[in-house]
Image (cartoon, rainbow, N blue to C red):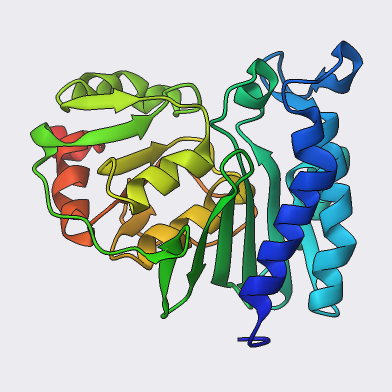
Length: 276
C-alpha cells in the first residue's frame, strides 16, 4: 500500500469532485452541455469532463509520478491508453459512469476510480453521488459498501440466477448464442451502468455480470470489488483472469461467488467446439 490513508483521501476527492462538478449539473444540464462521442448513444457531459479534469491533478498529487487514464482524456487523446502497462502506477478513472442515465435524470450513475500498481489493481472506489455512499476495496483486505463489510454471496444454479447484461457490445459471432442462453436465467437486466452492475454483484443483488465492452475505466474498480468479496472475473472464452490492459477481447464474465464461474461459463456455451 502506498500510504495508510489513501482510501480516505480518494474518498474525499470523489466527494469533492461530485459536490463541485457533478451534482450541481444533475437534472440541471443545458443542451450545450451534452455531446456525443463515438455514436449518438455514447454521451459525454460537462459533468464528466469537469469532474475528471478536477480529479486528475489531485490524484497525481497523492502518488507522485502516477498517470491518470481517464475515459474523457482518452476520448480526447486516444494514444494515452497505450501507456497503460504493467510497470507504472496508474489511476483509472470514470468520472460519471452511466452518463446516459445521468442525462435522463436517473440516479443509477456513479464515479469510479481504481489504483493500478505494476499491473495489479490494488485499490478501488465506486461512489454514488446521489446517496453519498461509497464502495471501497483493497487487494487482499476485503471490501465495504456504505461503511459495512461486504461478504460472499451464496451459490446459485444458472437457471436460478440473475444478471446484468447488454448485447450491444458483444462480438457478432457470439451475440445470438448469448441471447438464447441468457433467456434461461431467472432474470437479466441492462441498467446501463457498469458501476452499478458491479455494486449489485458485490452486494449479492445479482449473481453475474456479462460484459462486452472492455474499456478499463468500466471494469477495473468493479472487478477488484467483486473479487474481494469472494467473486471472480474472467474472460469467457478461456477463463483467464481480468487484467487492466489497454485492449482486451470480450466478453468477460463476473460472478458474485467464484464457485459459480465455471458452471456459468459452461452454461453460456461459448465455443463452437463445445457445441460439438
